[in-house]
Amino acid sequence: MNLKDAHQIRNAVNSGEISARDWADAALNRIEVADSGLGVFLTVEPATVRQRADAVDRAVKEKNLPLAGVPIAIKDNICTRNLRTTCGSKILEEYIPPYNATVISLLENAGAVVLGKANCDEFAMGSSTENSALRVTRNPYDPERVPGGSSGGSAVAVAAAITPLALGSETGGSVRQPASFCGVLGLKPTYGRVSRYGLVAFASSLDCIAPIANSPKDIALLLSVIAGRDDHDATSAPFEVPDYISELQQSVRGMKLGVPREFFGEGLDPEVQSIIESGIRNAESLGCEVQEISLPHTRYAVADYYIIAPAEASSNLARFDGVKYGFRSAEYGDLIDMYKKSRSQGFGPEVQRRIMLGTYALSSGYYDAYYGRAMKVRTLIKQDYDRAFEKVDALLGPVSPTPAFKIGEKTSDPLAMYLSDIYTVTANLAGIPALSIPCGFTKEGLPVGLQVLGRQFQEGTLLRLAEGYMQAYPVSGPPMKY
Image (cartoon, rainbow, N blue to C red; front, side):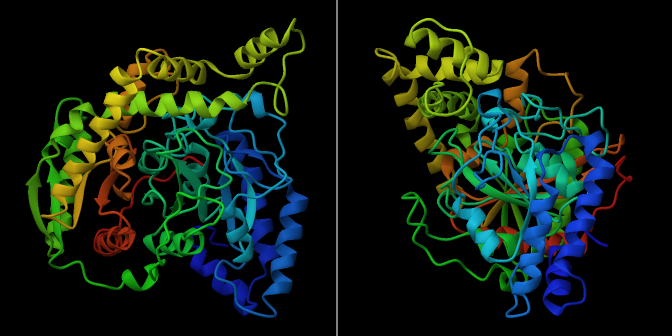
């Protein structure tokens, strides 16, 4: 049974050819084979999965469903009613939400079967999924390497053919980078395209829920289900959701593509650069017009992001105080001591680091110098993109400066880890959509993704380019280890 194609599964279940229960059993069997070596899931409840699949089988007797019986992995910072949601953190290790995130309700209404909760960096803070307090997730192409982060578990679930679809979240590249490292597609939608209700907040002005799949067609299918206005989320955009599937059929000939010169500077691995440049030439061969452009404020992006994101995180994570829910220290004196010990013992080192950075940036006397100035730089970065999109329809470049690195290689050097986000954070700062497309493999057999960035609410343009590219240049590489 092919667990890599959501359309195939949906069609088989709607037609009665194969039941949703059969697909659920196949996915659960795949977990038994692969998960102990890869560390994908934090929570799976097989009985609940089968009950849900049985309910879908009954429902399709009455009507076709857009995601009938399709197993899907959910990043463990998206709330699922009565299913543990930990954010990869000790502080929420036993938390069971009493409600669904909006995207989960939409998925269930469409007939999808939530298979389980996928591992992630703690509170989505990281680029390797090594910051999870609960387990290590490994790259299916080389288990000694990271899968990327923070949505590493979600990317591996799709790459290793456990599920055809997954949801991750994006704050600074947390879907595109693991998609690149694992050889799948990951789309960061425009800020506001998908409801954030039920996504545990990291940085509220940057966070997005984002789909992962093996094909542009399946990304389009998943996005069409979860996108749209939500009254529970005031930041969700009141715009009609396009027919993404039909947009895939349009030609890319004549599309104008820009290549930011700032994406090809110091720090870019030569082999990655060669693969990306080959990908750009491939896009040009499809009839696209390619030109060099400039995003001059890109040089400030990482510094800007690592002021804004930690500042918002320090505010959002103040709610985890050991009082109403979550971890509480077993021994403490007064109330302040309980706060201090619960947060010190419950949060991991990276989360503590970002809370401290953010609290400092927001503190009296420093707000204007740090957070206030960072928001001004963010505006300049957004204006760079606005000017670029006056000339081109989309931009091309690398997702990450390197392929997947070894587990433990960067954990002692936070700055080196932060620089992994150098090509991805600008899309979040500007609020624009961006997509990682499988582009090739290194000599060591590691996947490399080509990044495509577009105008706000033009996800269809990115998917159209991805479909044209992947039809003309399908990527095949070494077999995965799992």
